[in-house]
Length: 577
Image: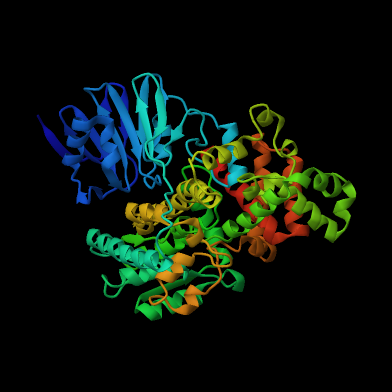
């Protein structure tokens, strides 16, 4: 019997598995009785007890695949189980530490870096046509697909089993929204605040020095306040914009003053985007269209420049405790959808089918409402998606269309939404956002920005205890009519300033559409990138020209998002050439 634990900077070989290290943070390797474990991310616990690397290998040697059921934390694991003749990959519930893998020529290659994996393949894989469709629809590429054919990535709570011939993926955990109706709002709120304090305490115990992202929103402000109990003073980092509708710096200052934080600020300009975007696009593992990765990078860089190597992020509160306006809007529309089902055909005939309805503002609104009434959840969540408003057959090249199922993005959303047993529409929307908004988007954004700046990050609001607590809270308490984040705000009533509790929901987006309207140099860079897409035979040239026209002549802010998504794709492709 033998147990070892080491940290390595060279790739690990076994007969048909290659674990390729990448980036600045190498995995910890441990072995016990022929079972080797390569662990990305820590700490991990079993029943609240911290797991050492050697203990982890012992558990998998003893229990095999069942060991994962007891492990909590944010991690990714590669378990090479020689006695059982299989290799298993695991991701945590939110895929916070993403792994990429490819089974090529009888060898399973695994890495935390897509670039490292692709560079190790004997032949560079081709671009995946369905991934291009997904990217235009979601502005990112949802797991398990990647931009490359034959290369996959882990999903939340994934178990990927490799038997030497094929890799089969399954899910080892799925939430059960038990919704305990017997407790009062106050009881839930008191428990939530106490639990948040425990999570903050544990987070501080793992990091001798840390800073916080501070946008001025509910999550980052409350988390900064809780962490300020443990770090004196706590460094907090905020990004401002010289565009009023995008600027939340005043709320960040309110939180900093209230909790005695050592606040650091940086105001972004169009010139920052011009300077940083080529670097960010070059460092992205694959095309990623969330423009807030740029301010996230500047925020992480600001922390690094001030001596901070670990940042605490507030992602997850909206998705656990119903903080997005679209949840309330969709539940309202769902009630209308159910009530108007008997007359939906008549509404279609009166307001959707006739072409004249688009001529008048009132009939246009009636047509829009009627179309939404014919759409069930989750399709209706994407009603304003660009790919819902355009003819997809006129967007993509004939070559790409030949390889596409144009409805596949909606199909993948329906599959996630309908995969829960006995859940309310709100719970299903939350779960869908756990995958697409958190795992596939926001965590990728923050992880990438922090890695580029040379800092690590953690997500206390995605602690397993908070997730499990959220499953007990009834939908009717998470979201009351006209009261987003009802429970969370109640928990924070005597802790946060009223100004922050009562502020309207705001994003962390980049004012790119406005800047490209007013800054010729930025607009020229964007349009040149769009024109370069015509060389890749992915889109119809007329579609590219129409996007530029709509952005320039119709609505710069609205179409600025689509310009950004296409521009980033072009810059990424150019960087791969």
